[in-house]
Length: 529
Image (cartoon, rainbow, N blue to C red; front, side):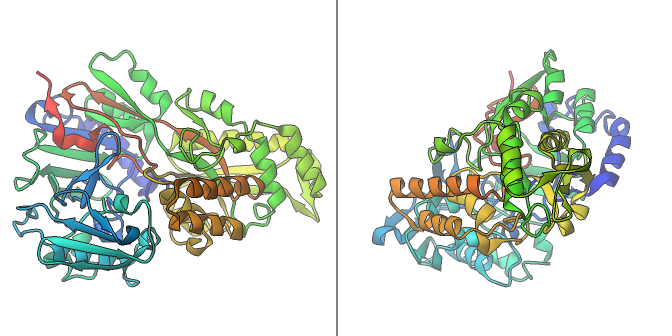
């Protein structure tokens, strides 16, 4: 979902108090860290686990692990642990991978096909507590063919399957001896990637050092630290003080570094969108007329201009307007008059203070957003203001994720989603009724048979035109029966000390910080001469 569960206000306060202490000489910030081959980066949240079996790194770019395939700067698939792209036979139902020779895990044990088989079988095991099994629904069987080949048999041809094999591979000789849900591997991982975890101070930082056994060659950045700084303002302060070499920042704070000659701003396009979940279990949000009226009342263009300072685009649905599967027919303008008409026709009549009511129920609900996230706070407040113009009272509250999660079933949340690679990767878990309420999947518990059918058709389809048509159906139905109010697609902004060459950005998903950002290829950075 959104920034993964952070440890809340207590962490923020502790980090704020530690700004001065952490910026002391030798702490690894830009004052001395970069010249010593180390980098300290400020991110908003930390993972719950570092085990791919539970979802860590499943979309690629994990620095500890590798998948069979990886993505380059343009998101084109390339071999990683596999020696080449897969051989695809049987009409798209069989994928055969041959492993790269000489790859070792960081503990010195060789990578074999058995490790790949173990990884996928464990991920798909019903007893493994991950929420992304549905992403590998097409897999019927995975088996080893000798020590260096892996064969996947699919239940049905699944067009984007190769892109799913960026899933990191774990060592069976370690992870296989533990319970995947509770074992020490979750916090003490061993992989084949360019870095190894050297220390994890929960709620504070994760430190990584170069893996001397890495098959891709020794990185020039010998160590890097991900400092967990939940509050946007604290992150900017630590970057300005030299305590951090780089950070992910919202537009208003990134702009304050514009004239800093020693720093450089990177802007990444993304599939990341902000939306309000409208739970069907809510007394007000469960009313389709309320949801349709909110969709018409919201001023998306104003949010892009005023909140994102132009660093984004209006969101008319879960797919951005430049995605090949986006349907231009769903673009729609802010229309307060239409919002009021929808409510009038549905029996929601203006009452005290201009707030509408129907059968004794006021058009009022709570909207939660995560503490310390200025961009979400601003979206929530703007949304509430637009809703009030239509006669709907939205009460905005901040909370930690520990507070938000138990309330997601029947309380609206200012959420963030978005996946790159293929429309199936983001839309199925966002909208399909079969995953409703499974962790952050389908948070609104949306249930529309027409959408389910179209998602299933697109998932199993091979013809590109047929798939685009199915996704167009999904987008059209969402306008008539919205489970979310889609607000904006946001660009990601990063500010870093200008000390290294080789920094680029990719088209990014919602999840960014650890995997995405200019450090997605930190193992390839070179010191500036």
